[in-house]
Structure formats: C-alpha cells, structure tokens
Length: 307
DNA sequence: ACTCCATCCTGTAGGC
DNA sequence: TGCCTACAGGATGGAG
Image (cartoon, rainbow, N blue to C red; front, side):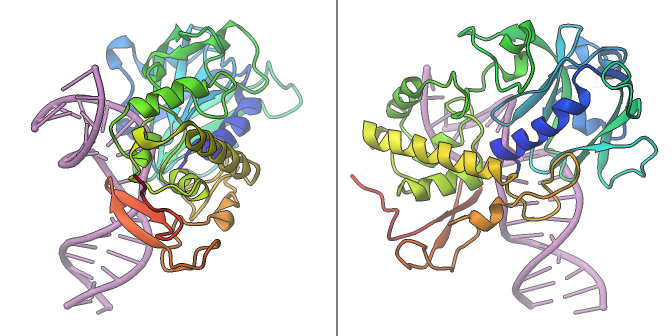
C-alpha cells in the first residue's frame, strides 16, 4: 500500500535516472493501466515519444514527470504499483503493464544510453497518464521535486489539482488543515484518508499516527481542540519522516524501490497488523475493527472516543 | 454542499 | 487435495 514515504522513495529513485532523458519508446501491455489517461487529449504514446523529461515531482501519493511539451506523465501506484528501472533486454517482470524506454545520452555519456522504466502493477489500481498542467493556486512549488529547478516546479497536472498538499510539504498550511477539520462532520480517520483535505496518508500511517496521538479512529473531527490537532499533525510528520528514512513499509514483494528492494518500516509499526499483540504503551491487547472497507488497528485502552 | 459507499483488481490465506 | 470465499485498500463517481 504505497503511501507518502513509499511514493517518495520511488520518486527519489526515478529522478536521477530520468531527469534530462528523452522518452524513446512506449510499450503498453495492459491498457487498463491507462485508466486515468484522457484519450481525447491525445494518444498516450504520441504525447511521450521524443519528449524530454524535466524532473520528478510528488504531492501526496501522486508522482509526475514533467515533460518539455508542457505536459506531465502522471504516475499513481494505487495498491500494488511499482516503477522498476531495468537494463534493456531484461526479461519482463511479472504483471508488467507499461514500459517506457528512455534515452539518457544527453544526461550521462559514460553509462548505458538506454534505460527501461517498467510500470508493474499486480492489482491494476495504479495508473499512468499524460496530463495537461496548471499553476498552483498559492504560487508555491506544486510538490516535492528534489533537485529540480525551473518554472515547471510551480505547475501541477490537472488531475492532481484537487489533491491537498501533504504534511511534509513546506507550503502545507496547518491553519487551513485544522480549520477544515473542525468544519467537518465525520470521524478523524475518514478525514485523514480524504486526500482533498490532507494528502499522502493511507490506512497504515493513519492507524500509526492515531495511535501516537492517542485518538480513536471514529473521534469526531469537530471535537478536536487546537492542541489535539497540533499533536496529531506532529505525529503524522514524525511517522512519515521516520518511515521515509527506513525506505518505507514493505510486507511482501508488492512495495519495493526502483531497484526492487524492500523498506524496513514494517518492523516499526505499533498497531497496523498487530491485532492480538500487546500495546507497547499499556500492554492491552490490540484490536482490529472493520471500518471503511478496510481494517482499523488500535489500542482499546489508549485510544478511546471522548466527548 | 457535504458525506459516504460501491467499484475497480488479483494473489494469498483460510475454511470446509 | 482442491475448491471456494474473504480479504487487502486508493481514488472516484454517484447516491443520499
């Protein structure tokens, strides 16, 4: 389940490999992975081939590669998407859906000139699309773009425009987020998973942050005071950053970096997937509730709904 | 306008 | 052993 840390690991791995490179070929093995591509705006392959990739940008769980034609290749990993960098001629990865060939001659004359970027996705919830760009409403950088510099950093794909900034984005507004929280009439976990309010958080990190902030998943958003909102934000940032340092959370082969390597944060999870085990704070047996078509893992003693 | 839920998918795990 | 069902969940569009 790639969330912000996992997508950032992929972004950081893709950036040095493709920034400045030119797309030399596209192979589509499964058109379902183009679900987010608007065919009326042009053919996916035609919009890519011959164009230079300017960088790699991420907002929340969305990743995009800005192109020199004013558009961007938008990548969403969904549940099981992977971007794998391969040497040309490498045998097809299982569940290979789309392959881009990029020419790196202009970037690095010493290494191999061509590289394959394989989009692999078991469950096909992820996708690739070429999209038009629009400026950010606040004028700040659209997302995190590593070493990237240029006017394109303040542009974002149209289909990402409704996605809120993520909590480790320097332009994230705590005030806007907290005001949005108090205005809502829903439970806190539902709000954390709403990417139009705050982005980058999925089921794993929502459960982990709620545990750290000692909040029950169904705690009404409007009931949180400023201090509780601040501590929740602090918990989110702390957990996302720690997971990033450890290379993300991997349970199986479904999440890996661009070289196929797993992350280590699974060892640091306090509640996710630990139902039946004791709470590290109080020893109470952790439980799992079904909620929103997914699991919510929490400590029934430390995380109690309050009035 | 806001909230919520079914839907898209496939591999694995568990039950019988 | 083998078949079958339940489960995992990110984003979306439409229902309420």
